[in-house]
Length: 429
Image 1 (cartoon, rainbow, N blue to C red):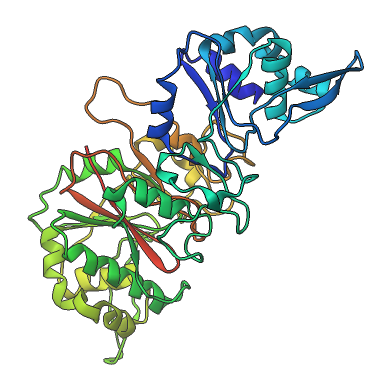
Image 2 (cartoon, rainbow, N blue to C red; image 1 turned 90 degrees about the vertical axis):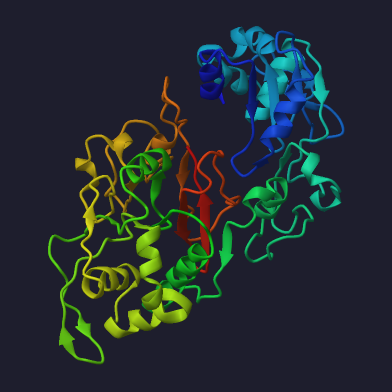
């Protein structure tokens, strides 16, 4: 919390808001709420978890202190005017010292500084919600600011099943943003990473793409970092009405798998989905007789290889179309530490300690090193705002009904696989 406060004081922003990392934040509703208050005045917005002020002993005076605090589990906001007043007690690392004085956690320490030392009252905002409440009682979740969860204590909302969405955050996000609600496909495929299961999911992705009017079909694995801006820049160099198979080989040689039932060896090149690959609309149309309506799984069984190899077999061996090498796709099969300019990459993979070499968060906070990529400063002077997507892990977490901004809705369908789901994103300039 001390680092967050110091960072805010250097930012020039009007409001400092904190929510815990297992909290759903309704950002538009939060902004609408903050506009009701003057950031130059002293406002402490939040919701207490107790019906009474907390009491504790202050060190070294050994005096009893009583104050209200907003629980961090629900979230709270401090105006710029109040944050400036807090500087003697919170700035430059002094927040930790203030916490040591009462031996209580960060949200209590905020209340101690604001309500006890500075005599500023807590402004109660009932639309903040923590896991300490009976969340199922909330009747209008779309009008709330935050939600947490704890086991079965979650909001009551229709949508995905409890197995698919135990926190109910994904269902809430799709209700709040209906323009994204069609981006999660229940494939009905087995929940594992066996070859047939992966081909099944890829087949469903392809069939879904063929029902759209998108120009490009792109697939990245579910543990990839994806820079959509860089992807769009690359795709605009190619005509979607021509035959294009874009990607990066994981090996520098063709693969000779046994082709069944003919029992002969074949050689072809494929783009590894560990790095990502894209098909133009023209190529996707031509692939239909090999991939549409269940034929992709059959083809995968012919060569007994996974989805990316099967696609390469169809495109490179059967259609005789070469792979167009895109150097900015990167998989975990490379030495990621040798990557010099990760901000110029389209995708970045990782595997254990094989990660990009980049300053930022600690290894414990960011073992994949992709969190730092997400927080790269926005480019100024251009028409492309930095919209980045981190693919969900194999065990889907929280909210991922993906959306970006709005300008290239017809340009590209992005697909990211999870064990039994496929997730699509409409990307934009």
